[in-house]
Length: 168
Image 1 (spheres, rainbow, N blue to C red):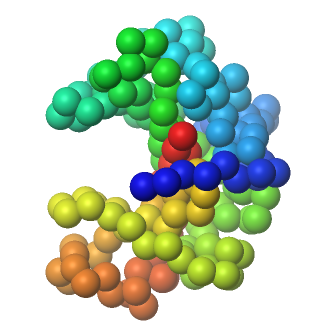
Image 2 (image 1 turned 30 degrees about the vertical axis):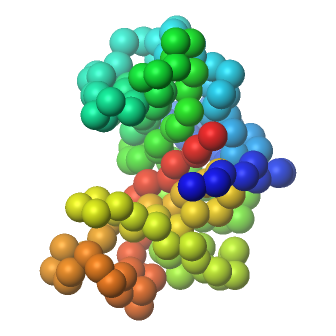
C-alpha cells in the first residue's frame, strides 16, 4: 500500500493516567524523538529500554513490543540499519489527535466525520479493521460474531478506536 505523509498532523499523548508531560507525534511520522525511517531499533532501546517482547513476523519484520507502555515499533528484517518503519499505539497510552480522535473513546463514525470518508483495510484473519488516512491508520477490533468478509460497515462504524498506527 502506498503511504503518504500527513502534513500538519499533531498528536498529543499522555503515558498512563497520572503523567502530566505530553508526548507529541508530529506530522504523522514521529513519536517523541523516534522518527519513522530515521530512528533505529537501537534508538528505541535507548529511549524505552529493552522491549518486553521481540516478535518476528515471518521473514518480513520484527516488532519491539513495550506492552506496559502500549507501544510497538517495527523494522524490516532486510534493513541492516533496523530503521523504524512503523509505530503502533494502544492502551494504556492516552492519545488525542488534533482532529479530536481519542484512543479508546472515539469511534470510526468520528473518524468518518473528521476525514469525510473511510478507507477500510484488513488482512485475512486479522483481529482489526483499519481506516487508512495518509500515514495514519485508525484501528477497531472486528466483530468476531460475523464473517470477516465482506466488511459489515454499519456494525464497525460504532466501534471504538483501540489502535493507531503510524506507517512510513
